[in-house]
Amino acid sequence: MTTGTKEQELAWLRTIAGELATQTVTRLEDTLPWYGSMPPSRRSAVGLVAQTGISSFIQWYEDPTSTPWIASDVFSSAPRELLRSISLQETLQLIRVVVTVVEDRVTPRSEALREAVLHYSRDVAFAAADVYARQAEARGLWDARLEALVVDSILTGESDDELPSRIAALGWHGEGEAAVLVGSAERSVDVDQLRRTARHAGADVLIGLQGTRLVLVLGRMVPQPHDAEKLPAAEEPLLSFLDIATRLSEGFGDGPLVLGPTVDTLIEASRSARAALAGVAVARSWRHAPRPVLADDLLPERALAGDGLARRTLIEQIYEPLLAHSSELMETLWCYLDNGRSLEGTARELFVHPNTVRYRLKKVSEVIGWNATGARESLILQSALIAGSIAQQGNRRGNRRQS
Image: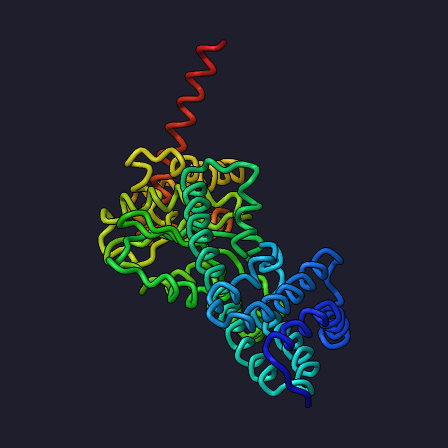
């Protein structure tokens, strides 16, 4: 081991700086698989960071009081896309390689230089952690604003061509069906807990907090290789959106909690959102309504409140399918509801056996999915018959005027 004055050591370090940079790049290629798989521009940027680190060490060794800005300067030379493309763990691996190369080269010359390398490497590691922490904080604020913008676009239905890319930028794993859950918000909403609950239920979620209103956009989560432990076990059945909403209900405040109808894609979620918002407005008019409640279970109340979407849903999902299937089923349902859901009264009016009425009501349930024998569902069906007949009469009058 040779020793010399600090000026001599600085002169020697400046002489071998280029050599150290070249050795570092070679060591990176040999020891870090992720480095070799990067595109040339990214590898060049990583090499620039390594070279800057060596030059900054020489400056720091000359004046150790420059630590605060010298260490940060190492990463200021890295383009922003590089910080997004390599993780903090990979950055620490990069620092370790640079330190190892420099340490191996300077140790035979001076013990003081070796200690200086170790001291400086600690400062650079802290600087790296600080850079990534600030990047994460900035990304978190940006993600929060972007998420609020996406949820607002879904609620208003004012989506544009950029909506899919914005959703993808948020790391949305959902694919296929989606639904919107709307309720009231507590004073301090635990957003992180809502995300954990949704993830464990096998759902992805976008969260919008608008004053006292909390909106969750739910989607089926597509398993990712690195997220396998976050999803339900393969043998567990896929939860329905209502089951997912029930698990999430504890994160909402008191008051109505309404789940909009399921739509085929997230881009169509505005329709589910409109139904859920309309349901929240009228949910208190249903005594003992479940929580959460389906927006489609509030169709009568929504229609009475002037919700055009509810009227169209009643007509398109109940009235028109029955009318197209069989006038006999339509007449039986009318009679059954008008007679207070009495099988015997309906049978007398139609001059058929009560078992025939039972059979026809079963067919009605098969055609439209609602059971006329239930108190709540019979209200929905009667509302659909009324809305459908009003619309049909209006169409007839319009046709007569045109003719």
